[in-house]
Image (cartoon, rainbow, N blue to C red; front, side):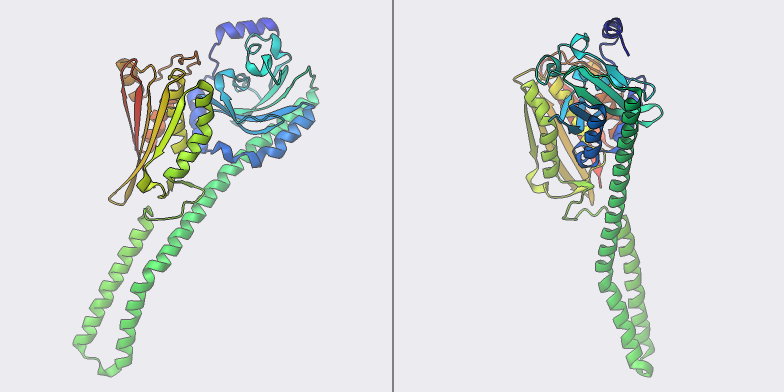
Length: 413
């Protein structure tokens, strides 16, 4: 329970609230490699149950990244995302225990009273949130219940909501494990099928030569037998080389993408679905182009959406209303290796040379967006770390007042 004086102090001392281990938290979230839009079905009945337990009209499962609160499952509210700085759940993830964060009346809380969901429809008043702890020190987001009138939750009901929040975390973990297992099964099946196809010919040739020797029996001349043996040896050696090549191959020629893979076309659609609403809210034009010749070649999803999404959110944040953000997706195949080349370009306020140096060295460069959005200073640092882990490169060009162009060069499988 918090008093209004507490709320005033929080507003003064903590304009940009984030956990003390924020970078570790973001890395933990990125390691899960979640596609936020895939979690709705897994958590739908839990969000409904939370609302029924609390007796509230709304319940939501929110995951919070550098810039955005993603509503991965909701009951009673049609919302997929909102800016992190406008959320109540950004305070819930500050909680060191799982006891929850409660606001009895959002309309008198200085942090929330002017937010559109309080001052306008649905005119929310009550909030109670439980942090979704992936481990003892790290919260991915929150399970929250909200109502348009005053509510009182008993200790028993709050405890039940805590149990539901724990099950949400279990569902997220299970979702990740199933995704990883499916990827491994698909990879194993691909290798098995390709090996079966590619070694059928060489094995048939070896068997054929052996049958010739057997049929001729004593009529074989030693020179012919030695010649056949030499052919069998060469064929066997080629077969071993082929097997090694298959086992180490990145399957660059594969035609059909799996759930663990993107194509440039599916990545384009995902970017527009996830970040189009942010651009529309800011009155920024977001365009995404994909290289036509490479749109159907699959590549692993690993961290790509997290990396690209942070850059797009950053560009939207620092581009004034009426501006534009252009995204270019390309893929090259160099010596059987796939190289993903992504560009994000905006015509926003730009970055100074010292800030560029700080970003490229992995530093934390935080500042306010063009519409006063809060800068947390972790998004670009996170991108830098994720790109390095993938053995990629982040290039940056900018001049003050001339916008920014980010270029990512990432080897993918």
